Image 1 (tube, rainbow, N blue to C red):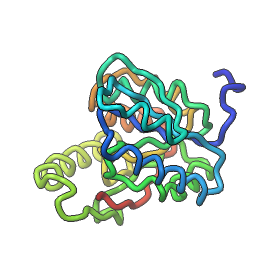
Image 2: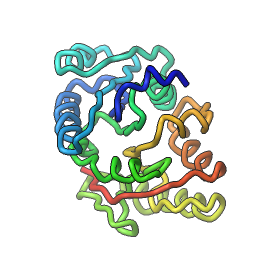
Image 3: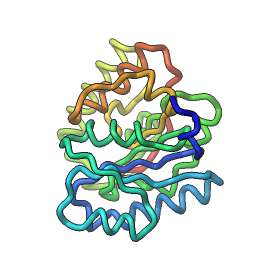
Image 4: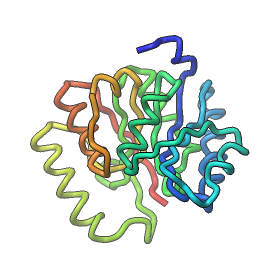
Amino acid sequence: MNREAMSLEVTILMPCLNEAETLAGCIEAARKGLSDAGADGEILIADNGSTDGSQAIAEALGARVIAVPERGYGNALRAGMADARGRYIIMGDADMSYDFSKISPFLDRLRAGSDLVMGCRMPQGGGTVMPGAMPWKHRWIGNPVLTFIGRLLFKCPSHDFHCGLRGLTKDAFEQMDLRTGGMEFASEMVIKASLRGMRIDEVPITLH
């Protein structure tokens, strides 16, 4: 890794595809989160081909924007992580599902030595899902089944295997050697962190 490129403590990374309606709110919350955490950081938008002016909104609010032509959630995040200037990376969707103003617990654990910090929306891990925030099939079938499998097969401590709000170190990202380009990227990250014996932590969050 080029250590000179890691000039900041944290990068808040958001993949983006036509998020003009919510992007400004996410960036403003992220800016507050950095301030409240006392962190020297940047807000990085990995744009996946938006046609609604999301790029201009982000730049007007002082975020850094990179273009990621190859479509896919994983492709956008992987490109953003590779380009991140922070020692720590906090990733989350730009649709207002997650409150970026409350990143301090993630940073606290990263600063204390965690490699990967998972957000947990599920009550089993202290999290909260607001009414209507998650389809019932995802909440009661999909996510619990995937989490059970992850905990059983890979000894992952997370109670919410597919939470999209998570933090990791830049070093951990590079060691994981992530390859997938779609939504499976989220699972690949947790599985590889577990297989490599990385320190995985979790913090409760609220899904809006």
